[in-house]
Length: 363
Image 1 (spheres, rainbow, N blue to C red):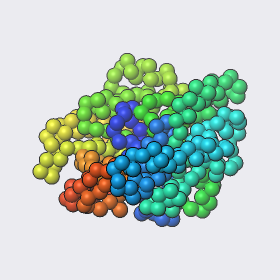
Image 2 (cartoon, helix red, strand yellow):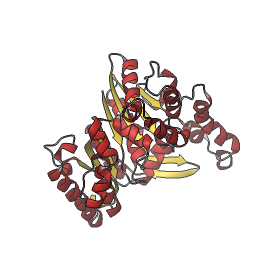
Image 3 (cartoon, rainbow, N blue to C red):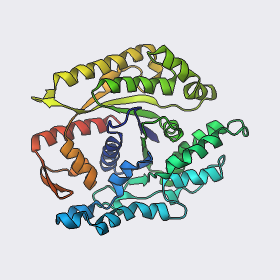
Image 4 (cartoon, helix red, strand yellow):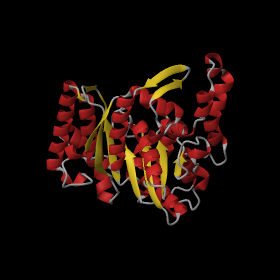
């Protein structure tokens, strides 16, 4: 049982989309493995990609009816069916159940699991989802207060392990089948993000080739491990999550893979500007590796050797996300997206698919 959390302390770097690619491609490639997506972002973007009834939009050609009230309502009713079930069939429903019984793992987690293929026939049948939910943000204060209870003395550790408990229960649900967990995180270091990270063995860090991503990577290292290049950030980090987790032996994921996403390509290679920024980020990661090798999943390898560049192909990304099309099913040619014609050209699409396939092979 292996779990990958997708997280960066910076938003807009493609965490949800790359989680979607990882989950769908891995499930397609390894049909004997149950792949579980756990959506721990209140925006629930990966859940929307997987289960919204995109066929309504695909089959609707009339511009006026495409945006009609009935179409939009029917589309989003898919999500609301999960919200309206008892118990709520989402990750927030699971959290509510844990709040009612904080220190006793649930024996049956099946009410919180769905199979995206039931809503999107393009997806593999061995792919499962614990749906995201906006209620997660509202529940965060209740989670935090429960973790601060004086009794039991290990309340914080037990509460921070709730999603880890969920992965164990899902593993039992799969029986003898192998399992893989993809956990999509919110950029913030909120308590629900901490639950996600504690449940993971490995951390995948998506980033964009800009200087703010370099600083965000340093924040990841400071927040998770209490280490880094800035003495002030490091000092504050050590008195919070990182220090406490280390003291009580709480599992913290190791840095596994770094994905430079949306790289501008010129004549088949990254543009000089993007390449310069990527090199700066690699130098930062390699410098941290020299000091803190133990925080990396593969300590003997330089982080720059696990640094994958994904070319920018916004059109393909939009088509996949809106229509819920997995990578292997994406074909060159025209596609209709919200009544607009989007053209996918063969060479850029092939380059894009190859880069994303290489990324999935690292898992």
